[in-house]
Length: 420
Ligand code: EPZ
Image 1 (tube, rainbow, N blue to C red):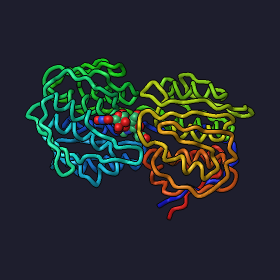
Image 2 (image 1 turned 180 degrees about the vertical axis):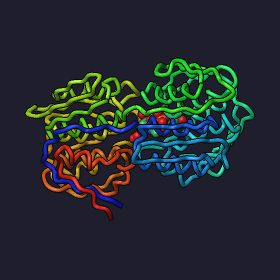
Image 3 (image 1 turned 45 degrees about the vertical axis):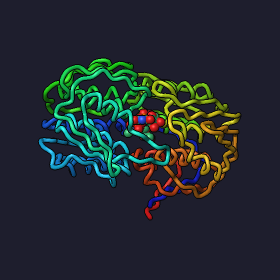
Image 4 (image 1 turned 90 degrees about the vertical axis):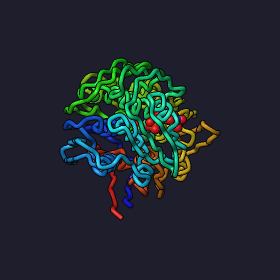
């Protein structure tokens, strides 16, 4: 298991090219199951989760070519050899549950392992199953697997009683091939939903309302192939903005539109960072600026993203003042707190709230990553800490960040990967 060794205290300065959005690429790769046509996807980030997805799809009989260095994936699901997403894959990447909607819609059957929990929460899929049953799927759960059958899904009027990115995506994909009209209400508004809908429209799907709470889909009998380029990763972008802020440095992110990061940019401005954002990209400077603590409360888009909570906590730990951080999306997304405290952070957790008192004098230590965004949080804290910080189990980090150490090193950080 690789580790990252960081010598803190260096101010970041430079420009980072943000990659394609992991959380747009994953549903879009699964959506290729909906068509027998060839799909050519570009600006696909070179990440472990992408590898896992391509492996899962080719294991089902999809022909696939993954050119990692070119950030391109070509897929063609002319036919499938099986309709199953097995436990050993689903437990490593719960987004595998997105096999369900497209496979059921196109082939009439699917067998997908229940994701089980992960370190940030129980991660139920009841909303996914509710929507598919409303479209006429017969679903049984046995042996830890979801068994779904449907001769042909039919359009339905579906209201989610809780906003869910994944349930919106599974339902959107399934409805594209259902007979008749589907109306999805209380949908997630994330930019990745809009990207998925745009890709489905390239394939010939009839969708309106993506990015609003109500999405209407007129099902079609078949979809064609198509080419598509993935939007930039707003969480990767936010992570590097926080890295520049916590080191008192500056950074330029070309090609990232500010609309992707509204709430994050607002909070960075509120704590005193200088931000300039236009159609060309985003610039942040914290050089010579005395940042102050701010409160955050995670919410569905366009609120402050839960996927930025851990990274922001690292920033608040090193910033003067008290920050109240409330995690409203996942029930256990404070796994990074104990590790941050090993670096000297002063944090008290009370249920869904963490009270962060800063500025803490962060000093280097050996810490352990527990999940994707917790790993990023520990790297950011290591950049600010005095001395050497060793972050273990960075396979978590590699799930969502392409070559993070290379990008940070290019901006002046002292950070090296040790392959163990
Ligand atoms: C997506 O997960 C993202 N993953 C997550 O990013 C992100 O944190 C999350 O959305 C919220 O923005 C991908 O897109 C691959 P949800 P997802 O369904 O779809 C509950 C990262 O770091 N819920 O919006 O699984 C659920 O337990 C990852 O890149 C149900 O109760 O999230 C959670 O509390 C981590 N029943 C809340 O809803 C359901 O059927 C939001 O979950 C589905 C979800």
